[in-house]
Amino acid sequence: MPDNDELALFRAATAGIKPLKQDTLAPVRIHKEPNKLLQRQLREKQDTLFYFSDEYEPLLNEYDGVVKYLREGEESHLLKQLRRGDFSPELFLDLHGLTREQAKQELAALLLACEQEQVDCASIMTGYGTFTLKKQIPRWLVQHPKVRALHQAPKEWGGDAAILILVEI
Image 1 (tube, rainbow, N blue to C red):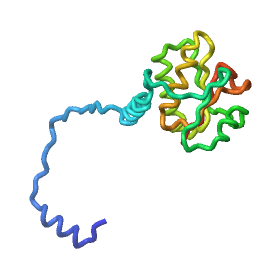
Image 2: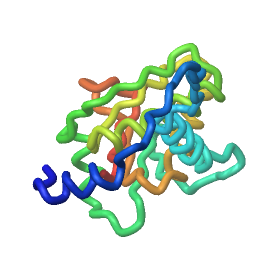
Image 3: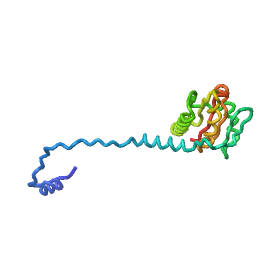
Image 4: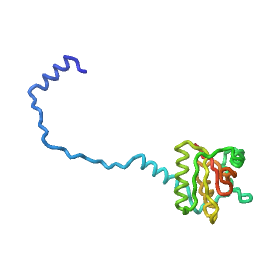
């Protein structure tokens, strides 16, 4: 709030000024700015998709059809804990009936959701079918830097038709 001296000085400086008459209407401007949050989410999803190459052939540990992977530098007991079901998945992704491209999109979205929601364990249902996704999903997952470990799920989380993953949060 201005004090009396400042107010008197302002009135003296503006004495005799005639106010402008506003008789026209300015058009309402509609700014079509894309939703920055939506743009960021799309960019992050595309960044996550970047990691999934179909040509990459990793060295996966497969014993009797059981797929497992442990990122370099991780503790070896993580695989044992995943196999026993010590980790409970908080997010579930069912890929039944999806094409490879759709599955890749959904996998990228799952990893992004794990990161955003601070979820460290997720379950991916690949199903049996033609075994196309069951074989490809681990190959994609090991390429992503946030995936710490993966193992075929124990019976209570899907058994042969599912994979449990541990994600860095």
